[in-house]
Image (cartoon, rainbow, N blue to C red; front, top):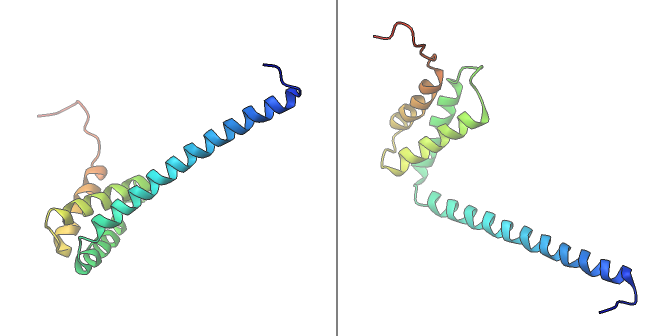
Length: 118
């Protein structure tokens, strides 16, 4: 097959590539919004008191993080632990604070060396 314009053939290839990229982006957005919807659906199963307790516990625990250990990843681990705790039926502020402090204490422990282990 011979094209009258080589430029037309190149344009068709670029257009095909652009549509493919667009389809991939749309697919990623759909997955993203499905994940958000699933997350919101799970959050709706928690009552307002539990969510308030989780917020207060997260604030309390994050204030206890040593400055040299503070990171976005650690805060996410704490939030995930609070969510796991709440879903397991432990809804009180004290229970949630204990769960969050467990994560902080795990990261704050000094590394044990191989010397003098008993």
